[in-house]
Image 1 (cartoon, rainbow, N blue to C red):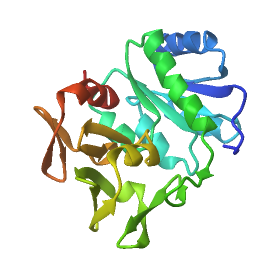
Image 2: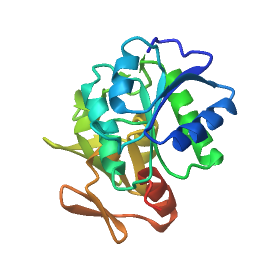
Image 3: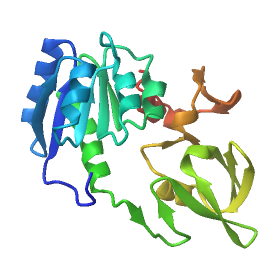
Image 4: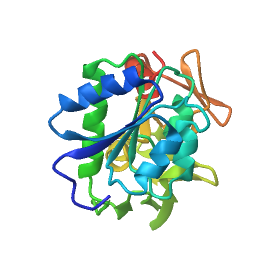
Length: 241
């Protein structure tokens, strides 16, 4: 996608159910910042269409014959933004591992559709890179201050962040870093599509969530408690309610 966000997001709907296509197309027609680029009845058809049709946003079903929506994403070198639309809740974690903007469960109500579309619009309007106070940041990594030096950390490598008084404990797949920061600063610095606060003292990377066990998020076998005030947001982000 170009650095300048389009005035309207061009949308391609991919689903093997004609009625489901009709529902999403109707939602698109009622949303002033979206425009339809057509529809495809299979992932194979969509793969061919994407080679010739400029698209900003895919509304993509998961379960389709011959090739699933997730399989389609694996074939795309530079995929557009994606909102999954499916009748199955079980693919939510896998979908977010593919960096989808949102995950809608059928039947789709317009209010929920609009919320997902607005997320896509915000993503399209976010600059590819920015430099906030505290260090440079890009779409795939950040720099954190550790022992008077800046350490580069990839967002994908971060498992979770825990508060430690005036510091935060940043756990990655390679190391554990003690960073002088507040949880609020972490929330503002980390991409909101990828991270969610589950407790006043814990932020987790959605791409590493293995399970929800009672009132805890499970990452790498570790149970991280979900605060009652955060439960609804966590479940909404994982589309599990």
